[in-house]
Image (cartoon, rainbow, N blue to C red; front, side, top):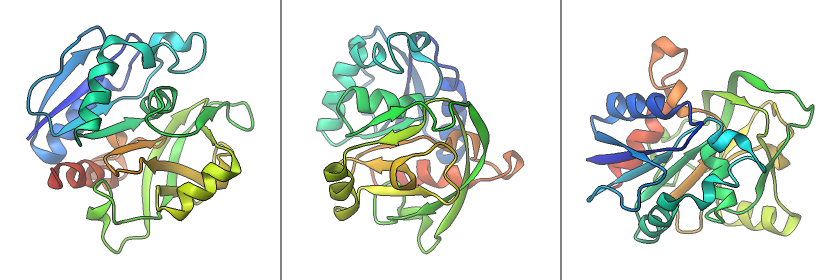
Length: 220
């Protein structure tokens, strides 16, 4: 199995993601710089990591969404390759229009960093199948702009089509309808604000994040 982690200027969870995927799945992971115009051949998974791409200038992920490598990420997603956007990576996916909605400033205008309990609202996706009958998992958030927003029509569509996959049990940032993670219609692109890369071993407080990576690659 092969995976790639995209590295933008200001990414700070890229190595976390590499280690998490390697230890969780045994996959070979390449680090790919934002200015590259090609991705490694035969990828099964692409990860857009957390951090502060381009220093969050303009607005979070606005510049990263225009990076040369994103043309290839979109093309890979169109071919069915699994794409995971975590925290800043989720912001990149919404700015790139690969996922609907936007991530706004947290409701209380404060940076939030703590473990969070999540409801697995759809365990039938390629990213959540490994959770099977589990309804509650734990990961960690670390963001100042993790407040998921979309208009009511979009939210209704996401709910109705099973695209909401994680929901906060105690919403830390004011996200609409407690949404913590969503997938695209095709089901091969997921964005989530909680960090599975910070919850992939019991020694980190939770190993629940490992299941997301394992599920993504098991379906490849």
